[in-house]
Length: 181
Image (cartoon, rainbow, N blue to C red; front, top):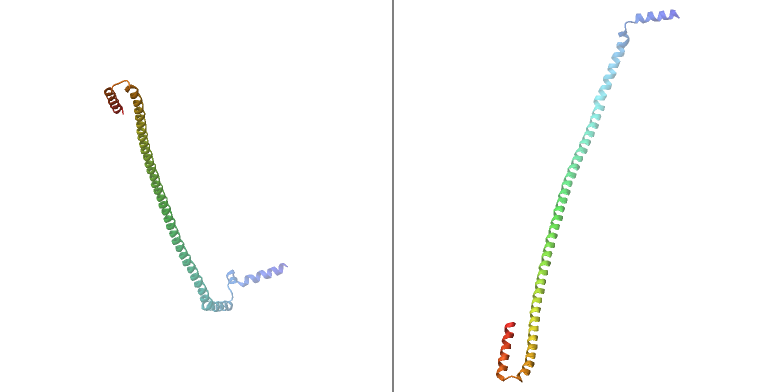
């Protein structure tokens, strides 16, 4: 077995250096280059344009999707702005309605207060006129009673007095009544 190893080692040294082991034979090198050129030509002529077309279609599709997304985004922003405007308008309308309600309530309040004042004034005025009427009624009733009493007294006194004295007494009594009322 040592002999076989020596033979193998000798053949390996005769074959050449390590670089020769890496390089193929010239005929294999020429055939490999020719095969590479043919494959490169077919790839360059047919596969590469088909691949470029597919990539361009994909790029166009992506750009279309990006443009559609941007359009959708712009539309969403416009809708959002419109919604914000509607909310703002609604808020201002609500505030306007609240203000109108407050103004109407204030007006009704003032009308009620004014009506109450008028009613109170009317009640006071009626009470005054009723008081005056009652006072006049009582005054005339008292006057009537006083006249009746005076007449009764005067009849009693008249029977004991002269006619002139009676007349003087009646005049004096009437003057006293006028000054006291």
